[in-house]
Image 1: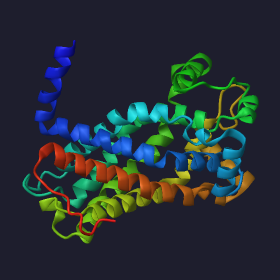
Image 2: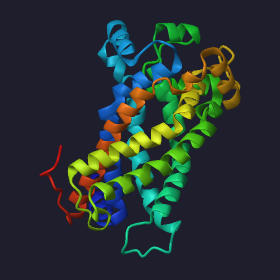
Image 3: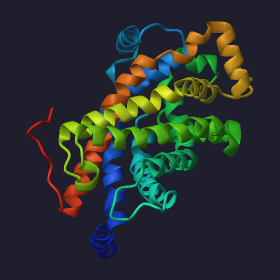
Length: 313
C-alpha cells in the first residue's frame, strides 16, 4: 500500500489538472481556518434575533467557551479539500468550454468566466448541501437548541449525520438543496467574474502573465467574496433557517416560499439581511486567503512564476 501511495503522488502532480486540484484544496483549507469563527457568528445571527455580532460573540464565549466558535469545523474541513479542488477544476474547464471562441493561449473571456462560475456553483451544491447542513446543526447547538428540538447534544459531525439519517432518512441529508443551488449558482458567477475583473484592474496584464502581487491576490479575492455574498445573502438566510430545523417536532417551515413569508411577517424584511456585516467581513478575509493560497500553490507546483512582494500588505 505504501509503495502505491508513493508512486501515485508524483504521477498525479505531474499533470496540470492534478496540480490545480491540489492548489484548490489548499486554498479551501486556508479559507476555512481563517474565517470559521465569523461564520459561526453569521449563522447564529441569521437563525435568531440575538443582537449584534459582538453581543453574540460575548455571550458565546461566556456561556460556551471560545471552542464553540469552531464547533462543526470538522465537517467542512474534512470535505473542503475535495470540494474546493473540484470547484476550481470544474471552473477551469467550463470557463473555456462555454466560450470556445477564445484562444487557449489567452485567458478565458469574462463571459466564459461568469457562465463557468454559474454552472460550477450549481454542480458543487450537490456536495456542499449535506456538509453545510451538518455544520449549521453543530454551530447552532447549545442546551436551549437541543431542548427546543428534542435532541441530544451532538458530539461531532458523524453524530449529527447519524442523527439525521435516523430521524429524517437519506432525504434529510439534502434538506435545503434547492435553495443551496439557487444561492450558489449566481453567487459563483459573480465570484469568479469579480476576481478576474478586479485582478486585471489592480494589475493590468496579470491575467496573461500571472505576475500579480500578493496584495492584488488578497484584495481581488476579498472583493470577489464580498460580491458573491451581497448578491445572494437573503437566500442564505432562508437556507440557514430551513436547514436548522428538524422534523421532530414538526418543522416550522414547509419550503422556501413559506420560510420567506413567515420570516418577513414575524421579523420584517430586515431579517433577510441580518448578519450581512459579519458575512461580508468574513468573505473578504476568507476569499482573500483562498485565492492567495491557490495562486501561490499553483506557482510552487508549476515552478513557472514568482510572486511580487514589494507591494504586499
